[in-house]
Image 1 (cartoon, rainbow, N blue to C red):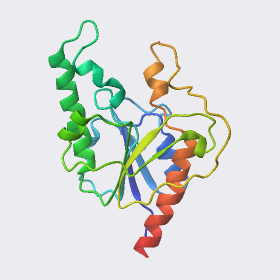
Image 2 (cartoon, rainbow, N blue to C red):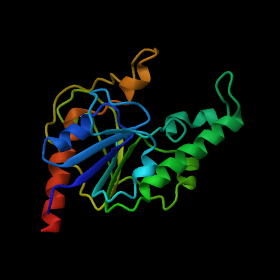
Image 3 (cartoon, rainbow, N blue to C red):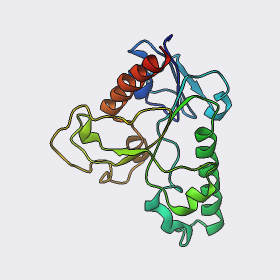
Length: 208
């Protein structure tokens, strides 16, 4: 099999894109923000407009999940100051539509990363299926805890590569600030490298 064409959606850091590119794949990232590393393999825009471009693998690194995740379900009934219930539910619909577009994309292999979802989000996602697994950074060389669920299509479960000590919830405990969202959405390089190694090898093997 030729090297894969990989689209990494909702990523501006380039961490997942670079992991696949370093292994010879034609990897591109796409986000509404420009690439931090100023790569020419990054597309600024809505990744949904690129789903029909003949990709072999779609990885959605960090889609907007504020309204989908179980930890924020309370805002649907009691919105934060200055917001309305109608706005919260509209944002939930938007988030579910985005997830649905990626999950049902015409691409053979798909991986979507997201926190645990509440039932209202699940009800709004077309062809919803439970996540295939959840992973932790400390399984891939980072001494931190941040449970991440992976929804997978035609991909094997991601296997731990470097279990280390340390269970610091660094991301969860970040103080409020203008850059908090940016750091919370940053992918862990150890997990990205495991994806590139294991899923790249799987694609080569199954296509042989």
